[in-house]
Amino acid sequence: MSFWTRHHIFEKNSIVLIVGILGVIAIGGLVEITPLFYLKSTIEVVDGVRPY
Image 1 (cartoon, rainbow, N blue to C red):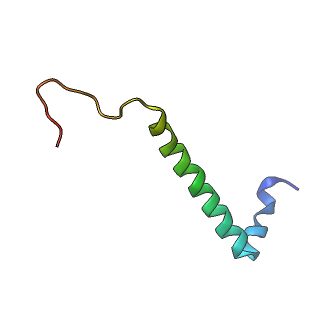
Image 2: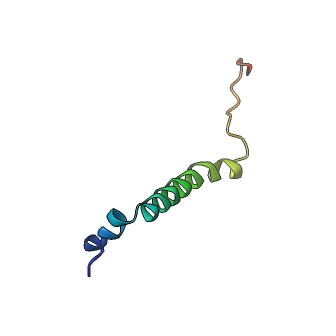
Image 3: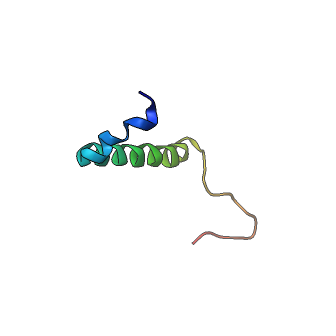
């Protein structure tokens, strides 16, 4: 049974689909947010410009 023929699991059980969607969103959020914690500064200092 190939990966693409197992989609009926998601079609028959909406809870599995919702859990999968939430998992993908959580992983995507972590990929976007995690690098910001490891940067020293996310704002570049520019001479002559003062931040708000």
